[in-house]
Amino acid sequence: MFDTMTFTKIVGSLCGALLIFLLGKWAAETLYHVGGKHGEEVAVYVIEVEGGEAEEEVVAEVNFDTLLETADAGKGERVYGKCRACHKLEAGENAAGPYLYNVVGRDVGVADGFNYSGALNEVADVWTVENLYYFLEDPRGWAPGTSMGFAGLNKSEDRANLIAYLATFSE
Image (cartoon, rainbow, N blue to C red; front, side, top):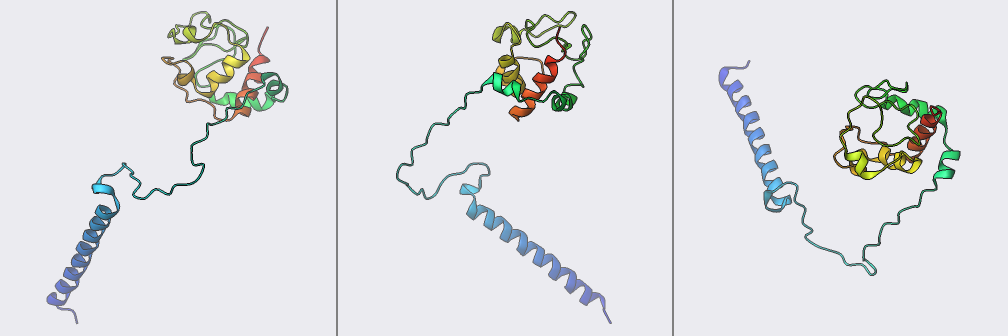
């Protein structure tokens, strides 16, 4: 039924269709990307709107007393699971990071037996609730040069719950 010439025509037509598809894809990318460069977005047409000036982002003031009153130490214990890989809660038990026993209200960089990078001492003197809150949000942004590799906690509730949990391990 099929001879070699028919099979060759079928394979040739499939290869030709694939070639046409790939050339069409290349042409479409060239047309729709400015100059064929990826990653650079240039607005071809800008629609002007009245009052289109960018408004400044309003930064909400955080009331730490209210935040800690509503914080749940039980939920903070679950959040602490992210810290457990590098920190311990027992006094004097350092791991990859310093121990966190009595950290709320403790001087910065004084955990016995831990070698700090020095970046924290330049930013703060004491681990107040405010300092812990902003440090846990973005450690490298708050204390540039810190050796802490954690990316931070995005949710303010998680940070407050974690601080409430750590406060239960204070003297």
